[in-house]
Image 1: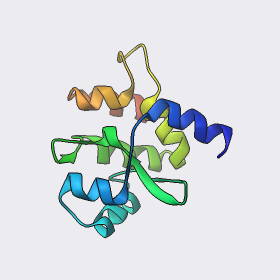
Image 2: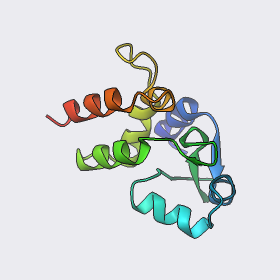
Image 3: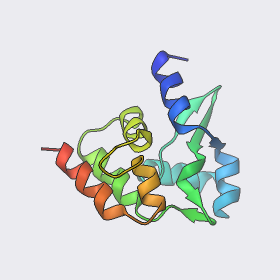
Length: 119
């Protein structure tokens, strides 16, 4: 694991394997892989398997506003590690981390900040 991996892991906290994420979403692990490919979720390799942040799934669904935010970050040129770092780093102007704002249904504020970074 790289130093960057450790930093991301300390920001993200809990991870779900593809199987665990699939169970939480009531879909197949292959569908979770498709969601990662479509920027609806982010996944990274840890200890030989793909994992996704547990915070991205709540109440049996992907957090509202997350797919649009992840697509926006990808369109802005963010790599997966950069997007994860941004999503979980506290921002005093929100307040809290962008993922916390999405969970609190403040997605518009999060996307505005993401769009501003593109310019």
